[in-house]
Structure formats: C-alpha cells, structure tokens
Image 1: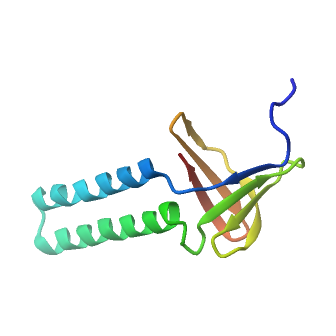
Image 2: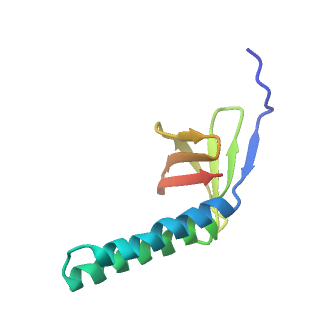
Amino acid sequence: MASHFELPVFIIVKASRWLKIWLYIIHLFAVPVILMAGLTWPLKYILIFICCTGLYYSLRNYILLTGKNSIVRLILNDADEWWLTTAQGDTVNATLLPGALVHPMLVILPFRSQNGKHTVILS
C-alpha cells in the first residue's frame, strides 16, 4: 500500500490554546477540591503546592516550550528514525515507545532517547 506522505516528515510543535485552557481548568479546579477535603491544613498546603508546581511544569514544557527538555520539532526520516529537537537546540535520536494516545483533538507521543524519556503533545 502506497503512503500518502513523503519522507522525511517534519513536525513543528506549537502551543495549543485548548491544551492551555484545559491545563488551567484542571489545576485551578483542583484547589477548591483540596480545600473542601477533610484533611489537615499542612497536608492541604502541601497538596496545593504540588498542584501549582504541576501547573508550572506543564505550562513550561508543553505550552511555552521553554523547559530544558521541551521538544519543539520532530523529524521522522526514511530509515524510520525519530529525531527530536529540544528548546535548547539539541537534536537527539529517539525511539517511539508503545502507548501513544491518538484522538481527533489530541496526540500524545512517548519517546525514549539517551537523555531519558520525552513526551510530545500535539493538539
């Protein structure tokens, strides 16, 4: 079966407005839930801090694309090799791991390289 795509395939990762909105909704609605939970105040503060840290990490790596290991470009060549370019300009060879999520509005691709694991979110 012939492919409709020419290799190599270049994918530029861009910030998604919808992903940004959902990240805010999920993290910011978690705070009132934590506050209403029957937990001690020190535990509530710790959980709110973790929630805020998760929002910061997610925004930096998947929306602003300024994190140390944020992936800004994907290349799939004709040898079936993936090359990932980070926000710092480093290019690494990576393997696409099983467990990718493909939805009409969201694609999540897990990769492994010599630098560790990377997750790319396309929406």
